[in-house]
Amino acid sequence: MTGAGKGALTAVWLWIALVLLLPFAIVLKISFATSQLGVPPYGPPVSFSAYAALIHDNLYLNAYLSSLRTAFVATVIALLLGYPMAYAIARCSQRWRSILLLLVVLPFWTSFLIRIYAWIGLLRPTGLVNTVLESLGLIDAPLRLINTDGAVMLGIVYTYLPFMVLPLYARLEKLDPALLEAAADLGARPWRAFLKITLPLSHPGIIAGCLLVFIPAVGEFVIPELLGGPDTLMIGKVLWSEFFTNRNWPMSAAVAVILLALLIVPIMWFQSVGHREARS
Amino acid sequence: MAPILSVEGISKRFGVTLAVDNVSLSVGPNECLALLGPSGCGKTTLLRLMAGFETPDAGAIMIDGVDMTRKPPYARPVNMMFQSYALFPHMTVEDNVAFGLKQDGLPAADRLARVKEALAAVEMEAFAPRKPHQLSGGQRQRVALARCIAKRPKALLLDEPMAALDKHLRERTQLELLVLRRRLGISFVVVTHDQDEAMTMADRIVVMESGKILQADTPRALYERPGSQAVARFFGDINLWPSGLAVRPERIALSRAPGGVEGTVTDMIYRGTTTTYLVQTHDLVVRVLSAHAGDAPQFQKGEKVFLSWPDDAARTLCP
Image (cartoon, rainbow over all chains, first blue to last red; front, side, top):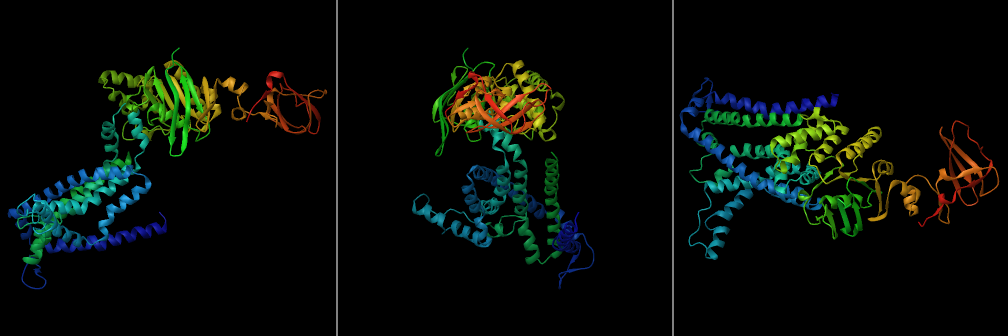
């Protein structure tokens, strides 16, 4: 390796240590501390009480499961929406491709919070959707659209869809059109050629897209807070209320540590699949 | 004999360019037909029309007596070997060859036998469990060929089959392909821009330019009786006088005795079995190819010589 390469690698490791390992070490330390009144609101005696509470109180388990379920369903929906989008963009002419890709990333040009507030504006009882439906005479009373689990799902899918489309597009765009022609030439109808050629060859894109949607969706806090109802249970909300409402830092730190442990499993799996596909 | 594949008055337009312009041709049973021409002459488009990847704007394509003009590629009993081979990278050699047979719904046992047979025909049985990226260029080409012949097509369409091989491998593969074709008895349509390759492999060559057929004939007829200057120049070397008179360099005899066209030897290129003389006549530098059996070149630089040729060697060609 060249000197410049070594330097760059050292910089990357330093960066990771500074923004990832160090904060995590602090969180890990707090999670084993004892909650107390004062500043900071935790003290030295090492305790496992936060982890014990995590196991004994069903609230946390249910919140984890509910988050994983929500993230899973959102990922599947994003995949079902994103795959046809990415496929269509990859099949377009060069000029259209750049325009459509620009449209996919266009929402990032506006603040995430403003976009979520825009959804509130659309979905609330006196919002655009209800007003239009009422004026058309399709409904008598406003539908309850906002503060529902459905609104949370909509928000998550809407927010993370570009993260599904982009890796899928990158993969599908590289696919040699001659492979599909060869499949057709050998007797495969278009749908079979898709299942046997396009789908397996876009596998790494599917995995990358799913992880990019699933991982942030599990810990999502803002969307369930703003679009969800009082009974919307997600681990991000629990963490927030432990920290800010209950001021129980060890508890919220423990919630965060377990969340990370849960997410490391799919990341490791992705890594191993990625390595396997890179080898072949 | 009825043709296996015939193209009748076919045209294909891409935007403003007419890629294939009213072309008609036919391929007989067991025949190897080469489509020869420079890039952009429409030969690949013609092949893709036969395979069904393009739909013609006019004309018809018949395969084994059945009109296939509007049939999609998967319904046509012909197979194409792609220039890039287009092997499926995520499948083993065996699965690649079996792919087409699976689409036909062949029972597993028959399929296995056919895959084995096809891989044996190209001497690639030992590579069945490998993935395409573990093969050399030549081996990949063999797998692509096996994948086609396993389907037992009525005709095999080959798009620049030797383009991805180095020169040494190319010549060997051309001969192997010839032998294999004779053994299998499949008609071939080969697209190439290399006239040597066309002459080596084809029974008949279709010379194309700007979407049209210039001439279609046997390699020998194209060489000896070219219909135009363009065709004559495409195959080997030829002396072309401004009047349109054309004589191949090897048909011209040099002599010191007066008679025929007078000229002066300006240069000579010695190549062992042959010598090429450049002779300055009053209106053209004529190339004369003379073979010698062991003896030294007969003429010297600066010498005055007379050129003559038999009547059947001279042709008058339009441009």
